[in-house]
Amino acid sequence: MTEKYNIIVIGAGHAGCEAALAASRLGLKTLLITINADSIARMPCNPAVGGIAKGQMVREMDALGGEMGWITDHAGVQFKMLNRSRGPAVWSPRAQCDKEMYSVLMTKSIQSQANLSLLQSEVSSIIVKHNKVCGVKIATGEIIDTDAAIVTTGTFLMGRIYLGKDYFVGGRFNERAATYLSKSLIDDCGLKLGRFKTTTPPRVNTNSIDYNKMTIQPGDEKPLPFSHFTEVEKWRTNLNQLPCWLTYTNPQTHKIVLDKADLSSIGIGETNSKSPRYCPAIEEKIERYPQKERHQIFVEPEGRMTNEMYLNGLFTGIPFNAQERMIHSIAGLESAKIIRFGYAIEYDYVKPLQIKKTMETKTVENLFLGGQINGTTGYEEAGVQGFMAGVNAVLKLLGKEPFILGRDEAYIGILIDDITTKGMDEPYRMFTSRAEYRLSIRSDNADLRLMDKGHSLGLISDKAYAKFELYRKTLNQMLEKETEILPTDEELNPWSAEKIKDEIDICNKYKGYIEIENKMFQKMKKSEARVIPEDFDYNLLHSISVETKQRLSQTRPSTIGQASRIPSIKPSDIAILTIYLEKMRKEKKPKAQIQND
Ligand SMILES: Cc1cc2nc3c(=O)[nH]c(=O)nc-3n(C[C@H](O)[C@H](O)[C@H](O)COP(=O)(O)OP(=O)(O)OC[C@H]3O[C@@H](n4cnc5c(N)ncnc54)[C@H](O)[C@@H]3O)c2cc1C
Image (tube, rainbow, N blue to C red; front, side, top):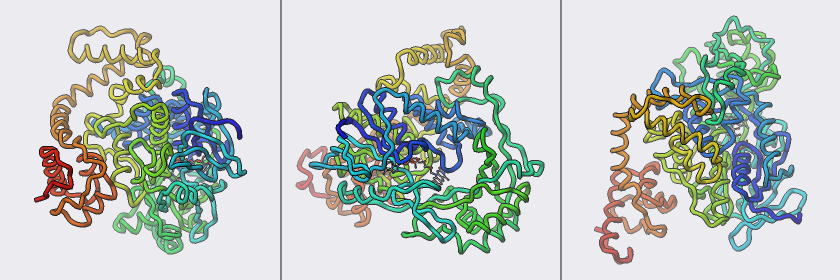
């Protein structure tokens, strides 16, 4: 093809869409290539966005100028603030979505975006010259020139679908796998790949469910949207929420599952690939907790225009006939008609220690990776990485400073810091417990933390930013008790008086605690920020173990803070490293000359 692009994004999943929108909105000529243009931003598992810590990330990305929050507000069928019974620090918004609607709305955003073209094709290889990306080859053999590429191929690389012990090649059910690109990532880009696995539960027809035997789970009475730009009152008025339902497994279910557990696809596969520990298959849960007589099953709608109900909690890899018996043993599902069976998928991922915090690979310049390809799982984890890869690819091509978020600034920063420094031995998902400063990085204050940055990047318009500034000014004045007069809701819209009052309550509640957290943070930050030279020779540290030296040499953390978060690195190792660096700084001698005592 003759046309050249600044950026080519490979894969229109959750990461690819955010990457392509960010890059094109920042003005660069962008091409999004995807195997199937009918499955843009498809949700192959539960069509739910947000949840514990994930909701925070969606709000953060929205404050920076991402798309997921806005689309969720318009495709959502039920909205709930999780963890309401606990403190606001861990409140996490979650929405059950209409999966078709989500995909349609994202497709519309992609197709309407200036500077962005969409092409249905499979990318078979990355063209690299002098260690720099210069093009991609598509399956028909044509080469498309580009200055940078962002790979966001999800579960498709050498994907294998498991139904019990049987398997066939596929990227998702009824979608073909990408069978060429892995080889190019290894041979042309020098990257090391691993294998992971994930499962999805069966779906049943709503007409065949007896809801009298289940407990209704309604949405929030006063739901809150994800996007800062959604006009709350208008949105609430038009929102017709659907209920979810709760039922339980029982000893009979467990017996059926255990009888067939040895035929499950969990724990098998080419490389005994790992599945997410926190999202276990029902067979794993029953084996892991033999004393538990029942497990929760949430029955959740997949959309307004479909009868399919998702059985959240029944992830499974057991054979089809056993799945049917398992479902029929559960209260309310005795006559349930299965529309889709549960299955497992195994796929290649790139070990993310090979990428920088900008999401650029360490092996090839201008090659960026985002989403499930980096070993993470979840739409939100994928979306935020894609967004950051898109932004950083643009900044790199324009010769500007990279955009990196700190662990104290955003969950997005924590995710990227974790995966690029700790590596992983199972699919990575976000939790609030991964955040050191979670009192400060809440879902309610994502705008206060990040909207300045989104505006500076150029992804938040001046008009929207002016509204935000009025909200922030009013909030600060009221917190300082300088005024009690609120602007009208029309002036504040899409922010509101309700939001200001809620924020004041939260700020007052946390004031003392946040001050303590900030002091602790400042103390830690002093030593955290200390830079470790890129070519630092860890063998110079005589008093630490060989394994620790190897781990540090392999990971190459750029700061003491990063080093301290590498699994298996002990505080005593960090103390030795800090003392050594301090000694180097004082002596200002070449490191080879410094004696380590
Ligand atoms: C069966 C199954 C179960 C899952 N279970 C869970 C779960 O329980 N919990 C959870 O959080 N997440 C789960 N997920 C994962 C969730 O779907 C992903 O985390 C998320 O979709 C990843 O987004 P992504 O953008 O990285 O990739 P994807 O959404 O997978 O999108 C990848 C895109 O890249 C395209 N593509 C791939 N290769 C090429 C190529 N060579 N050329 C062009 N285009 C290409 C594909 O067509 C697709 O559009 C599950 C996924 C599957 C398939």
